[in-house]
Length: 293
Image (cartoon, rainbow, N blue to C red):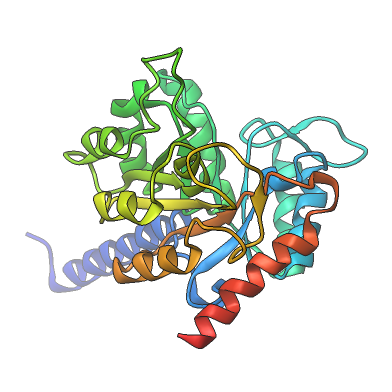
């Protein structure tokens, strides 16, 4: 039987270990703080908007738009001089360089994708390890065939995973993630960390009203790729928020109604070389709408 002093020491050690474990978990999947939100939401840039530039330049351009969060994607060259790819294949020096640059500009990395997650643990774990090092909230993927492994690693790393939709592919009936109902059926009985990474622009291409799909996916929306378009039902290029008919204000209202805590990434797929002013206009719309509300 342990003495009272030994029991006290044991309790102190256990408490310290518990606190340490909690700190580690918190560092892996910290919620997106209010300090980087604009208009009440974590609105920022998907680095793919700047895919003609490097990851270093994408951070700098994100800062120029006024955004405070960024979602990286795999395969972007690291810097103008270094053509190696940034993402889960990056080395620690590159990761630390990006993190220091983010800190300098007051920007938080919150997401990563769209990335293929292989159905083998060694390959999949590299993606989650990268997400952990970057302190990400979530990862975005279309790898529905890896869902069992994804669920396991999402719970282990305490990182959310959203399944992303591109437009339907009429010649490929096996491609089904364009359908919000398919994504809901995929995740509804799984861990709450799994859900949808909704792309409202691709929904518009397929003729869907974004708010209807968001309501269908209530409670399972991990993140959103934000786009506005001048038409619904066919592909047209992106336009600044509020100029088009996708219903950006309605989307924001619906997400707030659902107590959405994820990130909104502006993926502006137009005017690639000189899109910063138009993306800044999108940020301004969200800021102004939030102030009005």
